[in-house]
Image 1 (cartoon, rainbow, N blue to C red):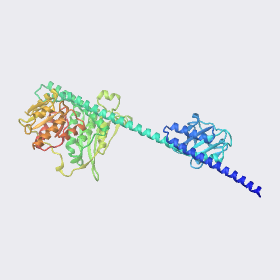
Image 2 (spheres, one colour; image 1 turned 90 degrees about the horizontal axis):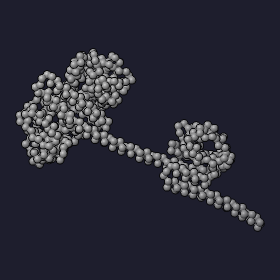
Image 3 (cartoon, rainbow, N blue to C red; image 1 turned 135 degrees about the vertical axis):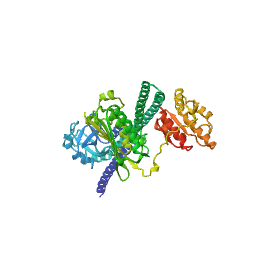
Image 4 (cartoon, rainbow, N blue to C red; image 1 turned 90 degrees about the vertical axis):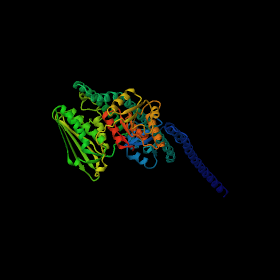
Length: 581
């Protein structure tokens, strides 16, 4: 009996040792996993993370090759391996790999029996055993594969261990994905900041160039206009008109470039104000009818009754779109006719206005037509040399039409002519009282008292010539501080204020004048911001500072006089008027 108890004790001791060994192994595995996770948390570089995982795996399971395989398209690709030559190897989807990726770990005594190994691109089938464990890769369910050259080298226990350790690989993939997302976000932020800085730099450049070009251009066009108003011989009158027309062409090119820049930057707005469509269109019709007649072309225009009346929209942009279409039609037509047809289709909320311009000009192919609305594009390479232009007109016009709820379409036949159809949406205005009113004819006030604030001597002389036309009494200041020294409530009927000046700029001077008027409870004098700073934000800044209107240089003498008279007629109340020259 004693011998039997001894034998039982031996068996119990052996069993206890086995249990102890199993527990020790389980603790070792758990410690390996925990230490691995802790080590991974301290790492940030994806390559270092993966090398750390492979090192941890090698402490538990012997292998000759370890692979991290991720889904790609319809198959799987190796994205990490202990042998760099294996990276990029590709396996087809489905079958054994897909079952493991979406299921449980598997131990394979001979890798050559796995179907995917025989179809692998970039890696020859390895002899020996393999352990295949599922992981969660960055692109979806993938595999961790350990290969040994010895067939049958792995047991089910090894497979279970690797399955538990595959958590480290999933953690590695997650960390790598976080790193990639962080780097992508950082790169995107850097790119966004660079784009913002580039856009701001472009805006500053365009604003400066606009100012610098408009200032001398003002001397050309305004003086030419004033010269044309004097008594000249016919030949001299023709030369003055040519100078003025050339200056206007240069101004239009400048405006096109600025408009396109504002459209690209999302800074161009369309107004929603009542306007009479008929007179708006007739202003362009009369202009281009004369140009067509000068070329010996027939010009026809028809506005259907449904398109007449008051609408709510941006009359300036409507004229700009129609002007571009008519200008191209007349420019590219050497013989025949140019025709305009305007109609309207009423909808439940607004009307669709259709402006169709047809010509018998040179036409173009569908291939070239598809490029016409690209910036700086024209019909062919020779068109620019023959007819001139920036190639921005149609691109700007389509953008404006789209901003007004419409579009521009075309059809053309080479040698036979073209048809362009511009559409925009506008609400009808039923109350005629809402329509904008024009001044009731020109006035010729005697002894109008004007404070002219302008630092450029040439511009001061030009303004003096314009004011002589209405026999105004002018006082001149070369900067904002001199203007404040000269100003007193009731002393002047109107102020012409340049914006960019030394000592004290025009915006600051305008604010100080308004503060002075408020302090003395005096009616506000009309202030016209007369400046080469003509971009949208410049106009907004001037009106926000207290200016009554903005007239851009180069000055149209008639427009400046009309704006002055209109403000004097309106009385002392401030009205935000944008009168661009």
